[in-house]
Structure formats: C-alpha cells, structure tokens
Length: 295
Image (cartoon, rainbow, N blue to C red; front, side, top):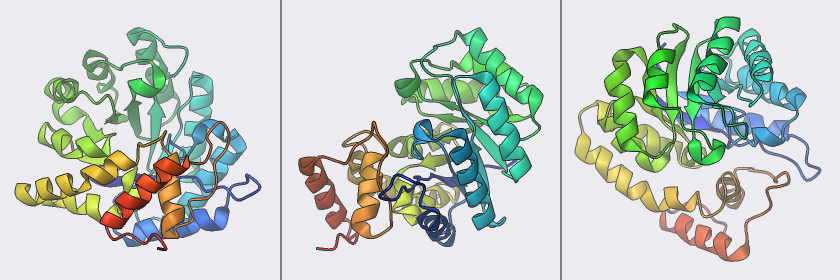
C-alpha cells in the first residue's frame, strides 16, 4: 500500500448542542477531496476522538467513507489505550471499507516497549487491514523506539508509522533500520520537509484542514526533485504551522476554519474556545496568508 502524499487529520465539527454536525463534516470532506489531498484521516487527535463515544466514532468513520466514495484513501482512527477496544474499532473500520487504520500508542497506562509490541501484534493478528502506527510521546507519555518498530514492521499489515516525536534523528534511525519495510509519515506539519529528507513519504497534516493545496504542493515538489520550491513552501508555512499550536490542537485549527467560513464547529469539554488574545494573533496570521477572515 503506497501512502505517499498529504493526508489530512480532519476535525470533527460539533453543532451548538454538542452533537456531530454531519452536514458540516460531509462538506469539509468534499472541500479536501476537491483540493487534491491523497487521503483523509478521521477520528484522530485533531478529530477530538477522545471525547467521542464509540458509537459516534464509528458514525464519523462511516460518514467519511460514504462521502469520499473511493475518491481518496481513508486512514481511519482506531486507537485506544485498551487493546480490545482498538481491535473492535479496527474491525469496524475494515468492515466499513477504510483503506487503513491509524493506531496511537496506548496513552496514560504507559506500556513498556514489549507491551507496545504486543499491543500492535494483537491488533495485527485480529484484522487484515493495513495499520499505521502513531507515535506522539508528547500526548501519550510513551515513545515508540526504532528498535520496536523494526520488530513490528516484520508483520505484513503494519505498513507505516505516523511519527510525531519531533526527533528527526530518531526518525532517521527508523528509516535506517526498516528501510522500505515501513513507510514514514510526518506527524508534525513543520517537520514535513525535514522528515521527507530522511526517508519520509508524506504527512498526516493539521494545517491542511485550511490550506490543503500548500502541503500537497510541498510534497509534490520534493518528489519531483524541486527542492528549492519545497523549501520555499516549507518556510512560507512556518508561521501558519506555529499558529495551529497557539493553544492545544484542534482549538486553533477549528477556530481558523470558523473564521474562514469553513464550519469548524464548536468544542467538547475539556477543550474550550480560544482566548481572545490568541484568537487575535491567529487572525493576524491568517490575514498575512490572505485567508478569508471576514474583515
């Protein structure tokens, strides 16, 4: 399974009553597909999966698969710190027709490297769908080490890692150990170009909820050998990427979408609306990119 390109970690829009806004979700999916992304990743961190019930989680997956209708790849979130729950989510995603699943390392319970290996081995043993492992130590408290990934990539359905450790040296070690047996996707927009340079093949992107064409163009330029253009886009995007983390993701990106008229929707507690000073800073950044701020 070739995962080269820009995949968007989509937001989950909620209405004023805190319910999933299915119409807004479908609209956003079509916006992204029409902008030429390689794929869509529902029910990840950016999709506020931690506050979705499993019924809601599966409903979002179903909506996205239905709306995409085979036009781009779908990597469905199926992560949990409960292995049995992750297997259940993986089975639903496979039955629903997702192309792959994204499984975050178990959070809070902080398993050992052997525990991480057994977690993914168990998932891989129970489903046939390709698996993208997700390493984000800043969220989970656990770092999936290169030597563990080297063991995991011996399993035929473990095809990629979304790497958000922020450690390019570690990512380089992953590529050195795993080579073509494991595809590497950047889990950090601002590090996409550096990660491509050490063997990465794409990104699972937050900022692409609002500027999908930019990240697609960066990746295309890199693989076409136009490194100067890739670097130019990388540097152009740095302030916008930084703005997406003025507060906890997905608060800034949903706020930006609402400012731009893209229906980001509301938040679920414990996430709350952006404070006014940060929101103004975000608006100022959006203006610099000539993105519609309604002002």
